[in-house]
Image (tube, rainbow, N blue to C red; front, side, top):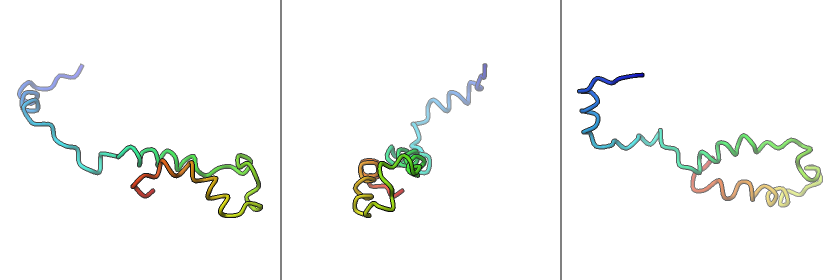
Length: 76
């Protein structure tokens, strides 16, 4: 059970809450895209049809529901 020294605790209590530095605050979109980017390399058998027979437009359309809502204004 950790006890802070009382003067330290009181001085901390009287400080206005400090905004976190921007490097610590992750917007939700970037957290999502970080976790999403681990999922993105899809194994071949998970793709519904062979990639070599797939035109690039169909591939982009297939990817878009995964990428679109997650990407947001923040580049991955």
